[in-house]
Length: 102
Image (cartoon, rainbow, N blue to C red):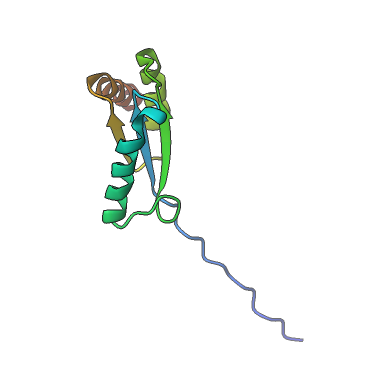
């Protein structure tokens, strides 16, 4: 008896992920997020369809930025968006330096 060929399912590539770090809160960033998402769409990226976005919010607590930045830098993101001025940028740079040294 000849069996039927096994059905082989190709695995789809992982969806690219954008890391998003802000010194502010999500509720304080509604307009900025709207612009960010419109920019993604203009680039052909639709959140949840062909790109994932993982958000980290410091909620105005700048001492949280280094830990949040380290979480994102250590995750499988393709790109990191850092908003909220110099404190956010410094946290990302510091997190990257720590990971590179390992």
